[in-house]
Amino acid sequence: MTAAGTDDAQTHSVFNQVPDLARHDLFGTDPGLRAALGRLGGGWHAEALSTYGTRLGDPEVQGWAADANRFTPELHTHSRTGERIDLVTFHPAWHQLLALLRSQQLQALPFAAPRPGVWAARTAGYFLQAQVESGSLCPTTMTLASIPVLAREPALFADLESRLFTKEHDARDLPWRDKAAVMIGMGMTEKQGGSDVRANTTVAVPVRGEGRGAEYALTGHKWFFSAPMCDAHLVVARMGAIDGPLSCFFVPRWRDDGSKNPILIQRLKDKLGNRSNSSSEVEFRGAIGILIGEEGRGIPTIIEMATNTRLDCVIGSAALLRAGLVQAIHHARHRMAFGKRLADQPLMRNVLADLALESAAATQMMMALAHAFEHADADPLAAAWKRVMTPAAKFWICKRALEATGEAMEVWGGNGYVEEGPMARLYREAPVNSIWEGSGNIMCLDVLRALQRTPEDGALILQDLARLSNGHAAVRAELASLQAMLRAPADTLEASARRFAQGLVLTAQAALMIAHGDAGSAELFIGSRLGRQHGRVFGTLDGDTGTFERVIAAAWPG
Image (cartoon, rainbow, N blue to C red; front, side, top):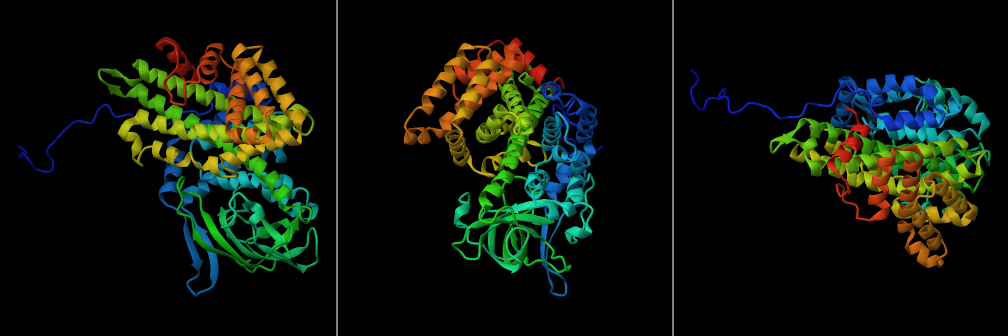
């Protein structure tokens, strides 16, 4: 008989705890994503995505995601014998995740295998992986975004192409010409400038030839140098002097002679968000770079890269919305409180349905943008969507991910607030996409600048939204409001840029929901987002619990 108070005394039984969400097919349980993929011509990729979605739901991959964030990157500035090595080492799980991404060619698919629907296919795959682990997305995104810039440099791209397009991951720390696969990063931000790249002071001077394709030595620093173990980075620097024109350079980690390029990693950022990826501060001490793009056109060159990364910010935040929603529904369907499941309680159903609407609208928007990226070169309407709606969507969807992940965490209660569960990592990750590649104000001002540069874009987009919404009264009223805002004096319009961008995205989401979604869900979305303007607290929908349950069930059959 066990004495009272001994260590093996039983204090309680464990029950009413929610099991981990594992062994689920991320693609097969997302009806909205599957429908959009087929509608936009990417149905040929559905089987591959089904296999991929099942793999991502496997406990082994979930374990990689946890381990890559638990065992963080380590910076080694010097070797044992004192040589400068500037090496960042990672847990093996990090490389497993990168290998998984590259197995789907998510770093290059639209350029490596162009065909109708390829942007929708790549967007869907990236969206699935982003629900599992976010840090590994950063070098993947930057590599994809660098391809159209590098492709304009025929001599350089001839050596890079196969290494950029391969489905293999090469983790070796070698000169890029000695590797089977490479990743590309970017370096723009300096201490004094932030988003204001024109304040940069890094200087490049010629060392072998001059002009496009020549070699330059870069001296200066970068305050945020994303993924410093990428094989090369696209870097903005001034030509010749601190007041020279800004140009863009391809700066590898190793020189062609096999010596280390003097890119000195000063420290890794102790940042909020994922802990798997390394962000750093670096100094260039005569680092060799190749001039790419036109001399003095560094900002337009790098902005093209930034446009592609902004799309991935939208996808990544839409994925956080989806992941938070699924985890919240899963928890609510298993957790009992006050005598019944959370999912059966009317107010909780309202919250979950509202989160489901937000996720559905974000998914519709990201897929519409993918379609625009695919057709922008040939279709003026698609080009307008790409120029105007990309920054608008980045502003709004990234903001909503912040609020929605917090709400999903709250569904979990105290269990959501501990690092052992999935919600803390989602919540910590949510702010980054609002900041990376331009914060909210920059995005909203870019929307206005795009409309000012190409005024016909505004008319094309508003006409398209009127068509998609089929004359819906609430959408028609919002379109009239947007048109009136565009006629305001410049200072007034700039001061209202956030309101305009918010209204534009909500109107576009409403129109997309009407055209491509469930009619009942579309009306709930419009009534809460355009009709009553009830604010941004989730769980304030008008309707009955049966309607809410249908929305939840349609979002995630479980």
